[in-house]
Image (cartoon, rainbow, N blue to C red; front, side, top):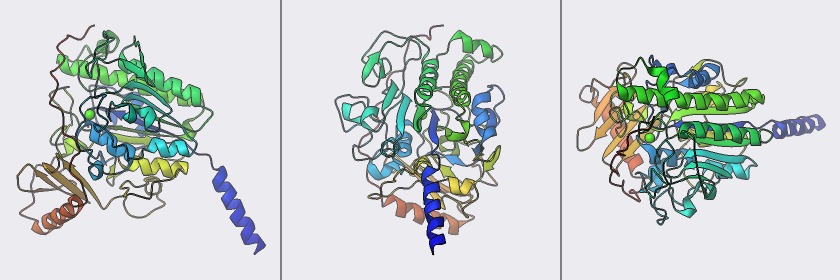
Length: 446
Ligand code: CA
């Protein structure tokens, strides 16, 4: 009996003393599925982003919970389907409206990690509300540096009042940023690691690259003199700048011997929009805004040296909403119990400690019901607009070219019913998408 107690106490102490990893989520913006080396990109080298997949693993069926910017971020930080709380559209930029953004009742991963003793930082694009109560500093982040809206000019510009020209902020104070924005975000990410290397930290590094406007400095453009299409060349330069910034962050971890103490995720917030920024989703059908694979199936990788298998590939479907549960479990932080959390802790699955798959089904809905999708195993049902549901077998047909709905009516009906049951749990959107702002007319400075 004494021996059993001793073992239990030792186990408990061991658990308490187990070092908690630092946690980093790197989010790209409008990066195409096929625009990273680890997904086969040929014309844009991304050695640093690729090193995350090489030193850790690639998620072959990595999804986001929405095909565009703000809702994906809401679901990621709240750890659940954002349609459960009405965050189904992009909020208009309005510092005077506290209803336009991540609803105040949602608990973010930063909040629970902070309560668990982590230092929390956000660097980059916020896009979850511009009102003071929706600011990153009010949503669990000790430190914030970046752009509060949905995008920004990359070159230093005179201060404006429009979303893309408002001053960059450090915490709640406007700052005069003189660097190319992607370089500045890399600098701030590195500085955050330097400041907090001795403590457990959580860093949410959300690039606005390579979202429009297409602007890059000569340093990066010069790397792509061989790309004839000027749009693709600018896009390549922006992706390359982001890769350099990721490299700077990874080097900061390496230099401080934190690689084995840090879990790093990399993913894009949605698929490539193709025409606006010359991105590529490769063999996947569709683009940003759509529920075909090109809108929601994104580059997705993670590293944790010494813990995750090097060069591993995880085949089963995972989603951006899983990062909350995964980070919470790795850190011992408490997951809210008063609400339905949809994300799953991925580590037991990727480490082979748990049988089965993280999700039997993943669901999507846009526009309060304009389009739907559900994936179960290899099958995916997509319903866009008022059209008939389409059924695809993603293993045989990853490009979603062959509609099997009439050949496999049983599966189509089963998935339609599952979708209807999920849809019944959701609420209508709390706000509508703003009308698209006029495209910035100024030519990118060189
Ligand atoms: Ca986006």
